[in-house]
Image 1 (cartoon, one colour):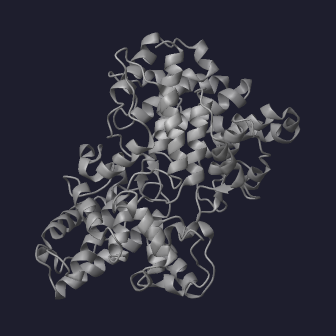
Image 2 (image 1 turned 135 degrees about the horizontal axis):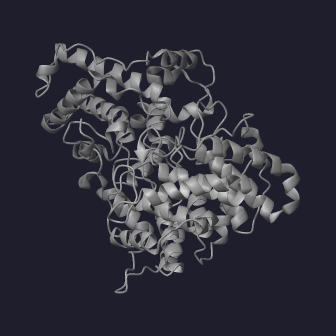
Image 3 (image 1 turned 180 degrees about the vertical axis):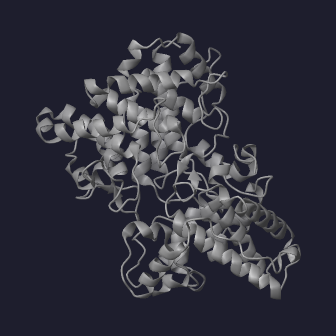
Length: 551
């Protein structure tokens, strides 16, 4: 499987997503002198947040495949099938990059097999795509799927659940082979990856059958429960109709009830989620607090002179509870969304006590949510931002938050890579993690963090591409924005030889890429996704900073 098969989004698959993103902001105003009216675009972006409160994220192959399999009665079914067929890569897989191809390929292949089993349409397009998907999966299995599996939410549940479903479909082909898939009748089962035995999946299904409650965070992946979901009396949709802020989880909970009760709130929620992209759906819906917190933070931190509508500021504060704020209804509160919301509020002159974050402290660092396996550097950087900005607004609070800030800064310094970058579990690119950590340490990490920030700046300087961009897989506008903010917002940069042409070339790349819409999704959920408004805010912030420097 070639990496080159996976580094750019297929145009047909992302047409509706990019149309939605275009509606979020006005068209970029690039004048003859090569400038952009950043302030006007920022105002339009803020207006889009209010007009589309569910958020703007790219469609997900994984989540869309689950709706094809679980909710064929839902409006937009034909469009979801067309999306899956169009999004398939030349090598037979799905996904933005080979390292993250397994989950979307399993979902798309299983959903196409499920559709063929229904026998409701001409099987040719679906059978051809399913056959290519099976070829890819069996080919990858001979290399243990490129082990180890990537760090993605619920992947240890999603993978065995989908492989079992695919193997059931393969068994069915022995008795009733489908045109175009006859060669797959009688093949041996698709194996599980090494280290994945399905034991945890069975434990969760048994727990559901017993009527015991599930941790709230697992509701986001409730679709892995299979038939056991119907023995879960404690699971209910939110008032908005979602289960776990996931279309897949909502469809799994709803089951055939959705076909029998067209007016059911959960069905109405799914219909609204599908309308956003004309059939396909995103990983998480809605993402109101997540999107608003990040957009406001990027714009205000960069100093773009915009007036933030009072209702947006109020919405961030209104969502805060004793445990913080969730990214959206149906999700548990988490330290990441909470800290970014608190940081944005303090930047906007409406600081709120960040004591809810103390409940996420593990003794060494801050977890994203209770019971998290692993850790996130960017979550901890955002917590440092939240504490630091609050102390800046309320100096007397240093007595309470000063020591946690010092320990947190030390923990972040200890997680830095030898080359000066940082990794993270919620974003593929080290440029995102590095800008989050470098900015937090530069502002609030104290003198002990200066060398760490300096090494981050040197890494950014050393990795610019020949065309002026930055990027992990290839140059992207998103990652270029993060790199430029690392250079233009850190005081440590003043000690480093940041040549004018570094920023000039980066800014020129952003101008050239303004009309492009092919940046790959790099944010991590059950599938990779692209939060359009958030990324656009980061790009506008970088452009504003470059313009302010006279580039």
